[in-house]
Length: 115
Image 1 (cartoon, rainbow, N blue to C red):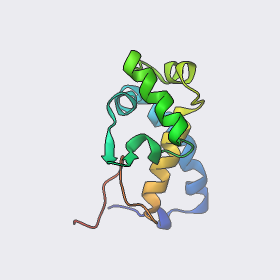
Image 2 (cartoon, helix red, strand yellow):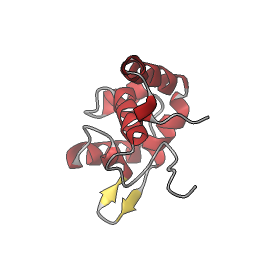
Image 3 (cartoon, one colour):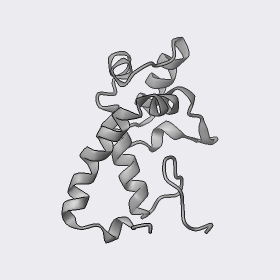
Image 4 (tube, rainbow, N blue to C red):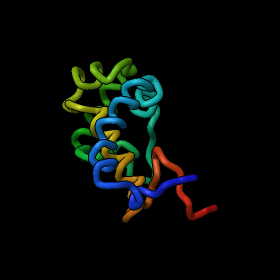
């Protein structure tokens, strides 16, 4: 059975971010692929800009760094760009997608509107 974010207890909601960050670190390679291969969603919107804390400046910093050489780890991303905690930003985006409020583009979770 699927559980909506709104059905979680307050304790579960509080524990969700640290658990997601740990799981993101466990599957680091898959999320590094996102940073290495993400593209524009629309002519004016890049997938990287959908992560919390990433605006135009950070996006161009990441794109220029990955063009020189692909990223290998989250530490590599932190060292070569001004992005300090990639796993935390990914976890925050996943939580935002799970909340399903005001989200137009889903990067990491499936939508239910087509079911």
